[in-house]
Structures are given as C-alpha cells and as structure tokens.
Image (tube, rainbow, N blue to C red; front, side):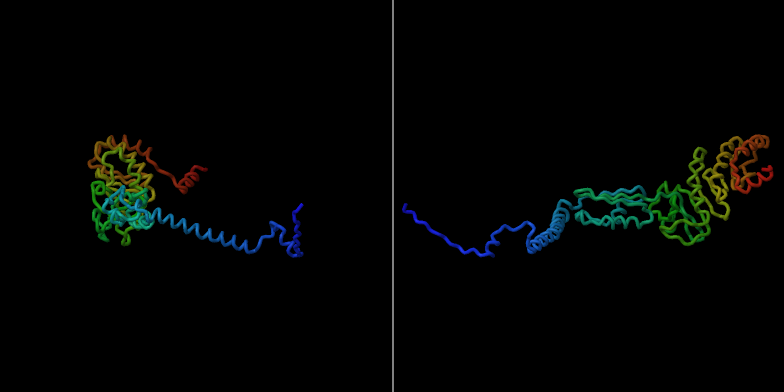
Length: 321
C-alpha cells in the first residue's frame, strides 16, 4: 500500500474549546434586547404616521370628495336662501374639511332655531336640516312700543315662552293670538317671556284646542291686566275672565256654559270664570227669565268647583268630622 498517512496536530486550549459549545437559549446578549426595543418603538411611531398619511391621501387630497351638492331643509320660516347664507359653505370645497360642528353652532345661535342637524353624505353631498321654533302667539307691550305684526320691533313666542323675531309674515302667523302685557322689561331675542301671568297665558293657549267644537272659539288676544286674573278675547266676540292660577278649572266651567248657551236664545258677551261660584254671565240681549231659571240650576251643578285643603277642613268641622 503506497498511501501516505498524515498526522494533523492541533493545540486545543481550554478557552477555545468552550467557545465551540452552542449558546444557551436564555443567554441572549443585551444588545439584541436594545435592537428589539428600538424596532418596536419605530413601528409604534411609523404606523400612526402611515395611517395619517393614508387617511389624508384618501379623504383630504382625493378629488372624489369634493362638495358638489348642498341640500337644505327647514320646517319653518327660514328659506333656502337664508339657510345658505347662515351655512356659508360653497360648492367645490373638500367635503371632509368642512367643520360640521361650527355650522351647527351658527344655526343654533339663532333664537328661531330649536335644533340643527348637519350630515355628510359620501361622496359629495352635505345635508342641512333645521327644526325651527313653532310660534303660538305674538307679544304686545304698548309701553315698550311692541306691536303684533311689526317685524322690527315685536316678537313671536313659542310654547316654551322663548321670544324670537318674525322673519316673514304669512296667513298662519297673522292669525296667531296676541298676548298683551303692560309691565315687562325690554326683551331681546332668545329671552324667556317672564311677564306676570305669562305662563298662565301660554297654558290657556295650549288648552284652547278643547274649545274647537264650539264656533269661533279661537283666541284673538289675551290681556295680562291684574295680578290675579287674565282676560281672554275670542274671535266670536266673547270675553272671558280667568283666574291666573286656575286656568284648567276655568276652561272646564266655560265648556259647560258654552254647551248650554245656545238654549238661552241670546249670544254670550262675557263670562267670568275666575269666580268659583255665582259666575257672572252677560248676553247680547236679555234672555227669557223662565228659560234662564230652567237652565241655570243644572249648569250650576255641573260646574267644576274644586275645594282646597282649607275649605275641606272647614266643611269637615261643620259636619262634625
């Protein structure tokens, strides 16, 4: 055999032998941990930036989200021209850059506006819907020069007592009842009508629908003259005096009287339902006395005369209770 044999000799030291051993899993260098932390930090910073950039590119820099259509709607006197002027938004603006909250605030600063809803409709429409206050009466105050129907000086009143200007007159507005007072401070738009008897007058208007079965019993005007009563004039020509704090009782008594008044043979001119008993009634002409006596007693028994706690206590004492 001609094969040569070679002997390789290597000096193996103690340190070099240990370096050839595989690293243990738990023995990770602190440099690796720093790299991992930095990588995670970079991801945390870059992901929001990328998302913001993508959002800007998709919505704010995209020509598909350009405002091309404005839709206005109001349930009251504000016209489309009025709404457009208040909104102050032009076609061609970026739909996503329009500040909906700012537009809503501009509308709701107006006393006539009760609520405004502003919505985007992708990709190119803005919808503006306004709910206005519904007027129930005109305010009149002769000492202050406030006259019903005056667009510059007078005010409309809604069911909550909020005062606001009339923007445009029409048949519905012109037919509203008038609340007249002679004692109040100079009002301004958005104030609450707080003259003496104001709440009673508004309550009387709200209850007026219960008299619609009788002819021409729409309210023409309500006068707040005294501290204890209010005077209501109906379109039929009837004048009714109500106790300020007992409007409901007065309405019930008036309904009872009206239901029998056609049997008297003469139209009613005035009724004082502020009194609980012995209600004063006047007619346009003197009715027949016999008919009057025959009808008056049944009406007296039907009148609503609620007893307060003092009266109930007194009756209890008189009856030995």
